Image 1 (cartoon, rainbow, N blue to C red):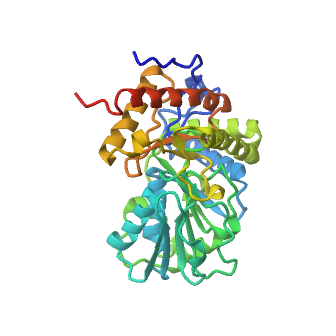
Image 2: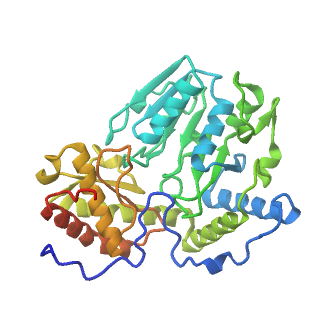
Image 3: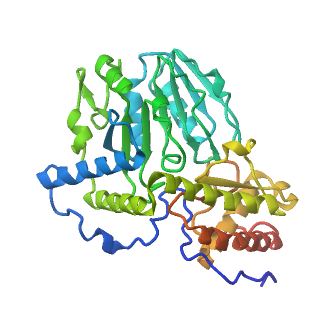
Length: 393
């Protein structure tokens, strides 16, 4: 016994993972009863369901009519690498990276695609690089929201209206949570497992007319894997943007996403989803500001994530530990909370500094965030009282 009283109320839905994320409120497996199962996705019916989901996503996103949207393999990672392997190399590149996934795109560009004229603009966890260094003549590659760092691009004013290069935006933790200035974005990718709480493994690829023109006019000098090919010999695979897929999709996941879109529309559409995420993020931010042990690692409050909120620990009993012990401390907190059924999967990303991470996207209910906060205090004080670390074994 630690002597610390457990809070009397637990979250009704203690699912705060940053991917896959919480299902939409009211979700039940019964909602999937209408899924087209045991049928080919190439059948008329299968193609119709995929085409219907594409139209639903475009409508919910308020996507310009001349932008294309396709369902592709490999979650957001697959969608973004598909775009890079097919479209970069025509111009010099500016890459902006400040979290784990941004660094992955840097590695792909330098080590895999081996581009020569690359400017890498980096910043430590908690900060953004100097976005004003974006060159209008170059392609720009960036993440809209650092899922592992808790830092987002608050707006897209830094992107030139008269740019000559393309903008490649990994938006998987930002889309549906903040405004996407489509006029500034040429290639956008996301996975519906995040802001819509859909099942994983499927990515979404969005192309502007400028990106389509690049696809038609540019042939990369490296082999493009079959799973990445949406253009062949200068001809865009138009069917891909109307329900055809490169590989076999899960029609169960397609139905699940369709149900999530239906929930989103019933909840008030895009603006309502954004408002829910903003309100949820503010709940965590207000609590951190009043906390005796938690702190906000984000340098500029305007750039705080609205979805993947990172919480650092400022208490000397934690900061005095080495990194390995800090990670054990956080692991012990997460284990206690999971054992109590109060919060699941809230330890920070393994590639980020030790801390907590709580998903606050639109599928999270505000009352569940209110309920989990006293449990964070309980878990911290409990682990602290045990000497900070429960040794393995």
